[in-house]
Length: 363
Ligand code: SF4
Image (tube, rainbow, N blue to C red; front, side, top):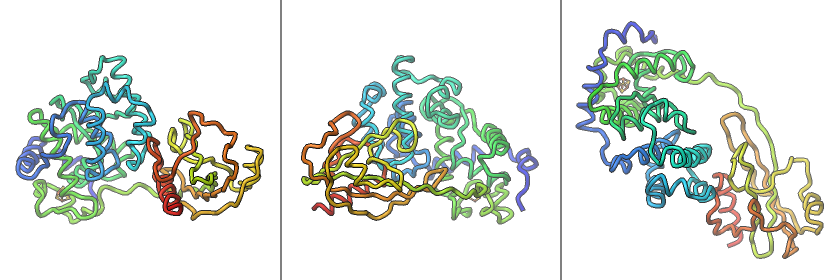
């Protein structure tokens, strides 16, 4: 059975924990990740934001593309929103990209391009929480600052048999106290990378390799064969389902009319199609809006997408429009796009797949 971490935490010293981890890091830790070369605050920050909720292997090509295009925070801060959203396409959790830009612009405008060098200073910036701040301070500035990302939470929950869902406020408090207690004062960058690596490669979510783990001798979960019970799962909540319809007006040349979504709300600032309640007739909507008679409508396969708070079921309707010069102007938030080359637009993943389908149909 899980035990409360408190009794055990006192008996396992933080320096013993970090020493074993550092020895393991020297032998097995990852040392060639692209952001480990020249680990400036900018590069560490960019990688940490990308790594939130995303695997290392997925992040690497995105990180390379971003740093080639925007080698410093100054280029990033000056980039148009659309370019950033486009480069982010496929990484998901687009609020991260929006916050990235906001933070870059703030750092340039208010800090002369220099990252603040305290947890308090860093966490005033959009998208930088305490753990990301800890990573920037330790990995880039070599300052002692604990981190608590998903990997670290898992290692600590198992090692100290911490009960409760890790993101519950009380459990979170315990975990911050533990991560603070085990973070060393020396070699803090290697330690930080080491504990993240251990969680990512040894103490993995579904099959921890305890036989090669440097922490096995003191790990309470391993000792009681209860690794699978930690960390505790998030209490399940049934998500509601919402239905909507998107209308894809398509001209005879194959181009489709896309719209930029409002900044707030789902897929904020990304490009999609006109969204209508399911009961609205797409043909009538076009007549009302454009004053012209559309051609056939074709219902495309339904798209199901799950957000953190609800499931969304989208019915895409292709609407053939005959009018070669529709009245909707090429304004900033509305464009006719060739589905084969939607260059320069930030697209939610399901919409990118839909364009792919349309381009295949066209081809
Ligand atoms: S011994 Fe196993 S469960 Fe414990 S920290 Fe190591 S890998 Fe994780």
